[in-house]
Length: 196
Image 1 (tube, helix red, strand yellow):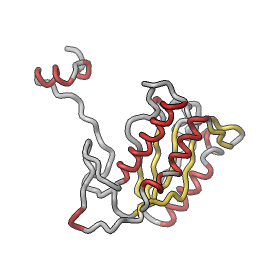
Image 2 (cartoon, one colour; image 1 turned 90 degrees about the vertical axis):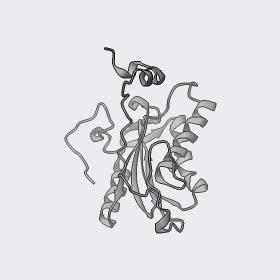
Image 3 (cartoon, helix red, strand yellow; image 1 turned 120 degrees about the vertical axis):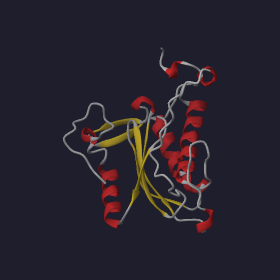
């Protein structure tokens, strides 16, 4: 029997075939609107080098890299409760810290994230908006229509304390100089890893 993903959804449902579900790496039941600092990594589609290149330990942005950088810096204009203490656009991904200062969320209005049900002012909604803005600008001016810019989803880490925050800021700042060790560099060396 062919792989269920080869069927369209209607055919699979008619035949009682369970399609694979999208798995979330989010913390179940966690309110991603709450006050806190989050370290995120957003990866280009198929890890393509869309955003530029690293030359002699410094990042040189492509036109699409400039667009991604501009859209990142505009996030607080659309979400006023957000601060961006550090980020870096790399050849095929973006690392950044998003600090949510909170918007008076009361205990009773905690809304956990779930697939297909965005929660206003939450980390997933912010990142979805950012990715959509980059894609829209790219398709208008630079990137051929129909070609995806982003890999599905993103990676996030809830920053637990000041020491961890400082380590992540250092990691972001040094990322171009450490490109040969970066896990997103398909040509890199895997001898060093940063764990947060």
